[in-house]
Length: 167
Ligand code: ADP
Ligand code: MG
Image (tube, rainbow, N blue to C red):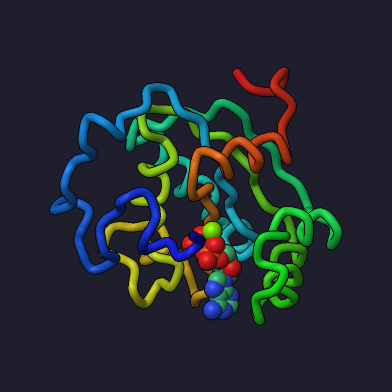
């Protein structure tokens, strides 16, 4: 379920953005919200602006945005779904080493679009033109997070934002 290559009917990482098939009618969701995080590696490298610009160029709107420094319990809770994975403790350490930018992106098929723009979890497998190809260092320090399903998007948006903070 959390293998990014299998999510939402997305194309394999080796398929370039320009060659990806368009989403079919059935999967079209207007004005969808998804959680995006610019991770500590990317904020430290001063790449937040370039990443935000890319989302906006792709037609995703910023419905909410905040810069935060996650506590260890906050990061453990956010990634609780990965608690049994061998990389969990390292991931929590990484996500708490410095500030993040948390955002709610909104637009048609925003969940899948964000994942396409991000690229594969491992930048070595990420397609040309994706954020992870451009900004990630390795499979852990991979610049951006994006919700992987409508269920998780709802949970993740609510983890960081009140509805009154979204516009
Ligand atoms: P994605 O962020 O693409 O949805 P996952 O949900 O599988 O990927 O993993 C969550 C995050 O955990 C990744 O973005 C990455 O920062 C880290 N991660 C995933 N797999 C590994 C791994 N094998 N080794 C180290 N860190 C990993
Ligand atoms: Mg994930």
